[in-house]
Length: 118
Image 1 (spheres, rainbow, N blue to C red):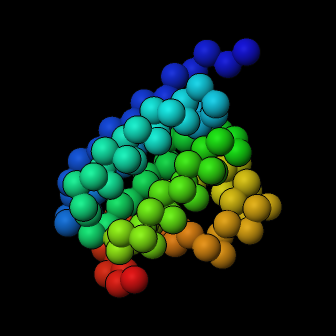
Image 2: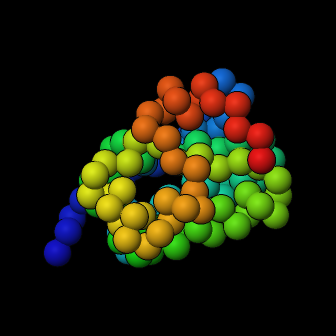
């Protein structure tokens, strides 16, 4: 059984809210990520960047949380960008064909530098 804890933080950087996760996004950690994403959404951001560079593992509950956030982005009119996907996590997005629906960039710098009008 996994005992890794998920640490999630958020900060306003360069006009975007950056939500950073470190650890495993699994059934135990997903509620922490979901709560932070909802708190940031409540601030009516123009852009949310989810930095997953510290995430080595993500299961379907994590994917579902990010899909839910993307649906909120479409409803509320903010852009959602994912960055820093490690190969193991990116593979999950590839298999689920979520790379076709999410904006995914390699680094946080790239996510903050892009003018992503949606």
